[in-house]
Length: 99
Image (cartoon, rainbow, N blue to C red; front, side):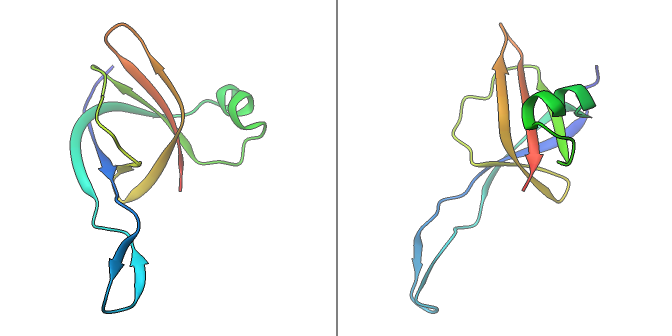
């Protein structure tokens, strides 16, 4: 496995009041860059997790646990949310789907 794909854990604070528009808007995301092994999710795993095969999902493997708070994960320009997480002794596996 090659841990060569840059991924960005994003923390987005919601509910910040914007006096210019009068609305509550999301803040700019605070990103933390890590390198991971990213692959497409197999058809069997999609069937087990989602019940069908229509979602764009990926499997992310990290060499160490990521313990900070985050809302989303960005890979290239696409945003993902975590559907399933498993922590092994030193590694962490995340199954994510596109937002």
